[in-house]
Image (cartoon, rainbow, N blue to C red):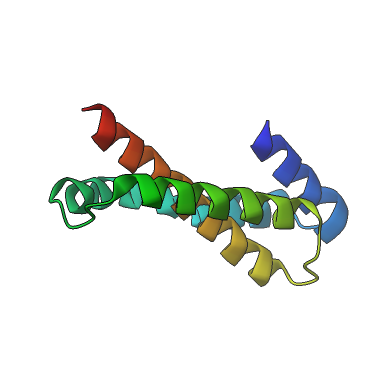
Length: 102
């Protein structure tokens, strides 16, 4: 559902073509490709206090999603950086939660 809302923002607010929309979305989803190296770093006990990182990145992801939904950005580049940051925080949360469960 989140991606439908983002695609609607791209279509109505920024009026970009579907190919440009796909380029921005694929750039923002690159953060999920870094999930495996994040898991290796987390499992190597480099980050010892995982619960604090869960809280920090959870709040960061929530704040970024609220900022994105308010349409503050006039420039598409700023929005794509914010989307990448949100997906990075979500991927880090997913890798941290997976390491806590396993």
